[in-house]
Length: 102
Image (tube, rainbow, N blue to C red):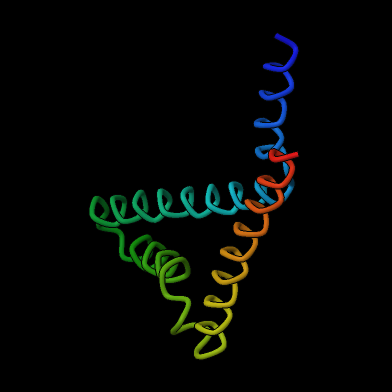
């Protein structure tokens, strides 16, 4: 019984690692942003006010058009962020595996 509790505690440690929490939070923010863009697109289709449509279009472009807004540096920066996240996930998985293994 005591061994089972220790095993469960080791499994739960990986989800409490700051790196794992950061990655989950990063993807949660991206998911919320995607929902926000979908809602804005639905609002754009339901309004006839020219000013509102302009604001909605600019907001959607803000979220979806990073490469045109920032040029090459935006593309390179985005790729670097993705590479860092993949590396962080790999390092976090390795650390969690090592702690679980002990």
